[in-house]
Image 1 (cartoon, rainbow, N blue to C red):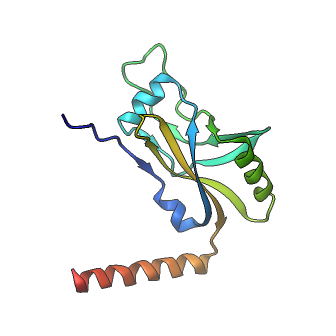
Image 2: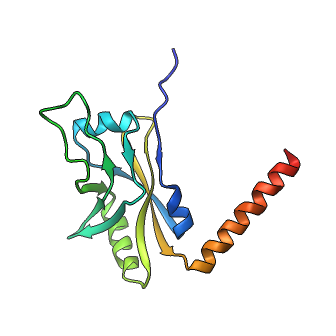
Length: 150
């Protein structure tokens, strides 16, 4: 029996826009229809970001399309979703966010081996325009090298 392939939603733009300083794997609080849609891969985290609401870390602007068969119990596509981390990790992130130019961005949403929805988040610092140009140059060099050897 083959195991079903669980979809993974990635934020490719985040690596272009930010330098990742630390990454964390955390749980996410979802309702049933959101889990169903996520299993189908109907989600987008390109414009998403994390912020603190009181002492809780919240994922904002993540879009999960409503599940087709859950008409009466459908969820709000862009609602705030609580991220689940240990209290010590939350305190550490809160302290580091006070630094200038720091933010927390979601990098990918996936399902663990146990079938739980997880989010990889990164403590990140925004790149300047010239840093982005350097990233593009590096990417071009890597692509050229791959062509020569491949």
